[in-house]
Length: 356
Image (cartoon, rainbow, N blue to C red):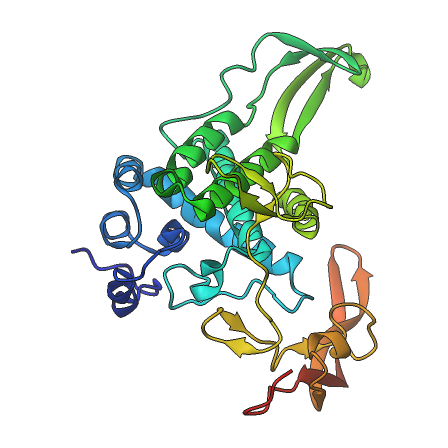
């Protein structure tokens, strides 16, 4: 067995224990930190089709590893001021521990943004020439037209369709073997995430002509920054629809008839979220004890909301930052180091035996 490079986050005892879990969720999230042979053969929970694709496309797996960091960072950005802050469990191969055992709206978001992250990473890797199986979008040839008139396809259009096809084949393989309510939920949210990346493909153009007259335009399609996809999926999270499976086990219906029927673009979930105020191993909640809160805010990051009524502690800390910066010709910026004392507020932990 290969030994992973120094510094890689591989915890063999955790991996061995996880072989016996009743249901292993999206193990591929952990794959970015492992060598390809170790990665393909030793991550529990991968089905045969996923292992096959993993072995056949090691360079794709490396690109996916880079993408995992991007979507995890985006998830943490979107929920930085919420009680659930996309917290991960670094010693758990599923990254989110027991949290995703429940089909909550948070699970819906994670599945969507992880699928979107894979599509975005592979789309960029294709255009950068990092993969043997794809390059520029081969369909973007000849001339076309937009609101500004005719243009010629040129440059290197991102091949988002290839990225979507590979992501669908790889990520959905496990859920298609399960075919239960949770699997249908995951398949639906995976699809929402994949489609979200394509939604934000931008047409970028370069003008040609005398003095930039733009008598001729050359254009190509490029994936937008992943932040746009993250913002879009965050809004979908806010409007996620709780659903139940129909009597035939083929599709979802709304769990509450008074609300809207879920569309193909909605995130869906099947269970209520756990109480993120308190630490609960069974539900995977890490609680908000120790989280920094904003004493003057009226939003979700306020000490009142974040700390769930438990109160907060205040400590005085010293911070150093750059200040009084001046530009000097040519070409440097000189700043001073300014020191200040600031109050930092952190949520109290739940007292032993207390119930909120």
